[in-house]
Amino acid sequence: MELDDEKHNMWVCFLNLELQFGTEDDLQAAYLQALRYADRKRITLDLIRIYIRADMVKVRHNPEQCLL
Image (cartoon, rainbow, N blue to C red; front, side, top):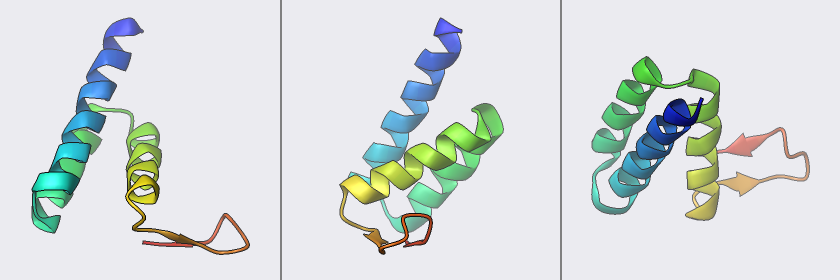
């Protein structure tokens, strides 16, 4: 389990770097690659969190509806 968590953290770091220093295409490619090797749900939720922290998501009154 610990190794899986470390791998997951590396993918999240990679996504953060691509958002900060890469292009949207770079981020999309990194995300698609991460989906192949990491837990799809966890990676997707982490990408949403990355966008929220970067102020790239507007959350409405209903938190289940968000705009990327």
